[in-house]
Amino acid sequence: METLFWSCLAGGILFAVVSVILGDLVSHALDGLLDFLSVDFLKPMVIASAVTVFGGAGILLSHYTDWGGIVIIVLSVVLAMVIAALVYFFYVKPMNNSENSTGYSMRELSGRIGEVTIPIPDTGFGEVMIKLGAGNTLHIASSLERHQLSAGTRVVVVDVLDGVLRVTKLDERKGDVV
Image 1: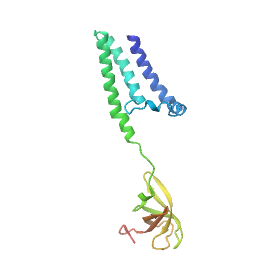
Image 2: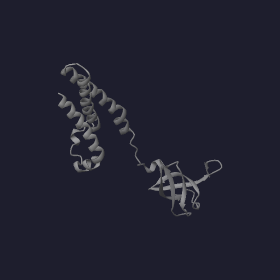
Image 3: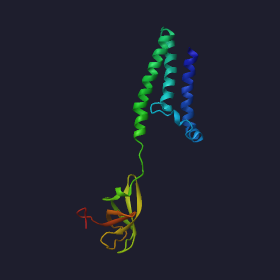
Image 4: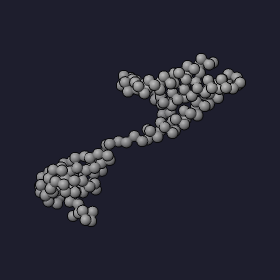
């Protein structure tokens, strides 16, 4: 029985070390080969933590208690399931929910404030930089009122037409559109 517990503990620790060191390489090598096994709760981290806790709890319970083998196995399984559930609900699930996307839709740009980086002529196109998230994006822009807008002018996006931002000058004093 002790061999089973030591094997589970060593296997869990080995899995953790290998996944930290070689996780990306193995993931790219398998390239979704095992996706059919993917159930939301059966993530590798959850399974590895359950196996490791089962082994560790079994070793500790057999060394420090006088309980029989069946009781030790049942308690080890219960502890492994509890710890696996805690790992899933307090680590894995929040990490899945915290993934941020840097994608955006052009329609989301309406109402955003930006700065002219390449001057916009009366009837032509220039370029506007808009801050989105942690970065800046550059977009082709034209003047809504057909006024020339020089570089450095703060503008607001009024509309997006065929991928071109239609902008107007922002009144810095009031924070309003001119």
